[in-house]
Amino acid sequence: MKSCAHQKISFSDLLKANRRFSEHRDIAYFESFTESQAPLVTLVICSDSRIQLCLFEEDETNRFFVVRNIGNQLGNNWGSIDYGILHLKTPILFILGHVRCGAVKAALSDYSHEGPAIKNELNGLHLPLSGMGGSGDFESTWLSACERNVRFQVDEAAKRYADRIGTGELEVRGAMYDFANLYQEGYGIIHPL
Image 1 (cartoon, rainbow, N blue to C red):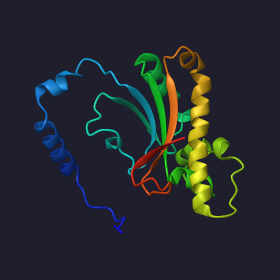
Image 2 (cartoon, helix red, strand yellow):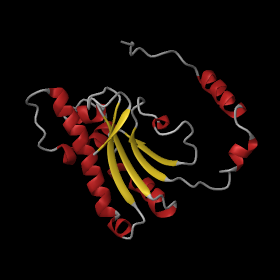
Image 3 (cartoon, rainbow, N blue to C red):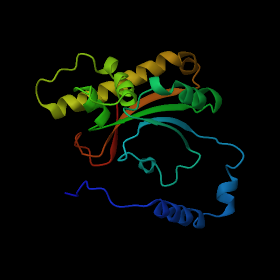
């Protein structure tokens, strides 16, 4: 099993990586989106560093309008989500949760020691997780809570964008990314809810 220890990286390393990225793309690549963006999906996804867009395709540039926060919540980011749906007119709103979400785990426990900003974001998970008890196997409870959160977010989006859904302009979907093979379908598989 790999260690979770942080690898050392500097800001200079990031800039070098960016140079390599730029050098491997020609002008036509950038010209295709310098004037406007045309994403196909508004994606609400957790900030967790284990969840990256390369889950879908190697180069996601100009394909996803991404809104990230802890716990893949809609409530903290309605303005950004509205922008993707109402202004960029993406035909899909995709809420992607994941197994072993730290925000959901924190919301299931006592997080009173956290600072005000983190508490505020975790407070947004109380409604979807209300009534989730601590009895039984914690791993199962945690997975159920992660799924419940995604379903709650999908339901909230369905209410907010009911008119667009009704006209067929928008599809709202939710799923779980499984990097731990908890669904027994393979590592790295997206499990629709």
